[in-house]
Image (cartoon, rainbow, N blue to C red; front, side):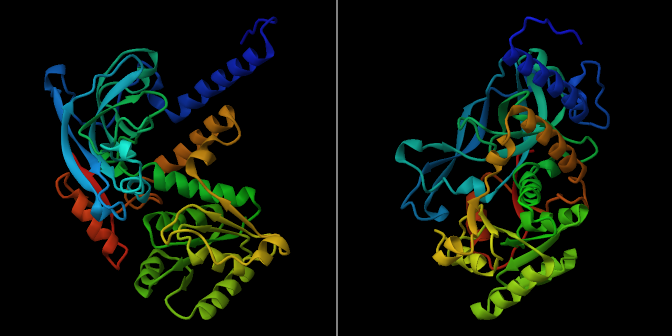
Length: 396
């Protein structure tokens, strides 16, 4: 590779980053080559005449009282099918998962935010492109996952237009595309949590709350691959049984007396050498975790199922040097600058794609719903006392 000796240092740095990115992307995205033949994808290609002029999508038109998802007004909206521009592709959506990260804003946003598109991630098949060099990595017929980033499109739509580089993720061709619906939020969060723990020095074990969730189940499958233990914190005995069936060894049930289960948890933390906890619950749970963690331990908040975090003993922060931090997937992805982000996503993407198939570490168990029944299904799921399958809206 020849580089002109008068190029400014900053330009040289960017040029090197681009070269490194392309070299890495060729291994992560085998479809980058223009002469690539898609293997195993039996999805028939659509012609321009097959693409409808209009499509349907779900939108939140009102937050109602603004206190819960049940208060929201959710409607099916008919809109023009989007047309891809240069560097973009049109995806016929096969399925989209319903994540907690999706519905937090539905009833808790400013009035001017409505009508609000719904859904952050999904999967489908590329049915049209707008041309341009970058679209060669995902030609028509490619199975892809996608992430909606601009707030103008949601994954709960029959069709979406996505940037071919920043919003599209080629999926394995030997897996039914609908089973890749939950490829991003939960799997990448699991990878990010363990990576964050490693960098913080908690290399033997971590504590995880809301551990019977789909994310929690993924962590219990992924952690042994990295020689780590998960100390699972759940609310009910049936959740403990669910995790035991997956092979989880360390489980604390919090339905009894606080002091009893906290002593049990503290003993596990000490025995296994955990110095980090990841809390999706918040509320009083955050303070309980601060109590049981060792001096200089860290509690990472990444959810708020029980509302605002509290019950924190100031002495833990002041004298025992414990820390309360946040974990946010987007921040983890972007940390360290562009080059580290690219290499991180290549590594994480390979790990995730290898585990999406049946029996894989990030394979999700789904309960399918239609657009028409999605709202009520979400309300019913949130009121259920049993951790079940992840809801998935099917569009095919």
